[in-house]
Structure formats: structure tokens, C-alpha cells
Image (cartoon, rainbow, N blue to C red; front, side, top):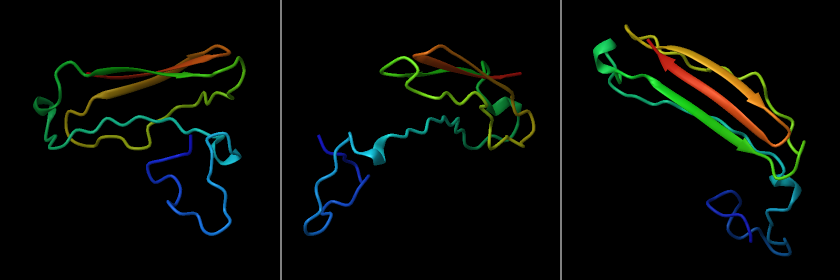
Length: 104
């Protein structure tokens, strides 16, 4: 099937072939996560349990992906009572787990 959801222009121009998922442009994937909470004023307004995420990335074939092993937060909360954060990862030749814990 061809790509969708605004990834490429609808009508690529006269003579252009319709793109396919197997085209080189789609050989890269970027994985991320976001914890979005609004209106946090202090500790009392955060979820009391914190959060635990286990993001899993699965490769179709062994060693098909060069795993990113250095996961970091690019934004850190600055409001009073913000949770602490820990990110770690482990992987084998086909699966990567990125563990993100937000806690007090």
C-alpha cells in the first residue's frame, strides 16, 4: 500500500510514481514518548502513583535495528513537587524495552 496521513503530498506531480512503504525514504523510524500533564501547580496536582512506561520496539528480523541505548528527557518539569525520573533500556537482537519511571 502507499503511505498516508500527510506523509507525502497527495498528488506528487506529473510523471512521479506513487510512493510505497518499501521505498528508501521509509527505512528510518524515530521512537519517542511524551508525558503531558497540564495545570500542575504543586505535588498535590500530580497523579499520586507516578507512572511506569515500558515502550517496546520490535524488529522484523534479528539485528535489523541499531538500537539507541542513550535515552534522555529533553524537557524536565520545573514546577514545585515535580516527580523524579529514571530512564533505562535493555535489548536483544529483536526487541528493545525502554523503561521510563516517574516517581516521588
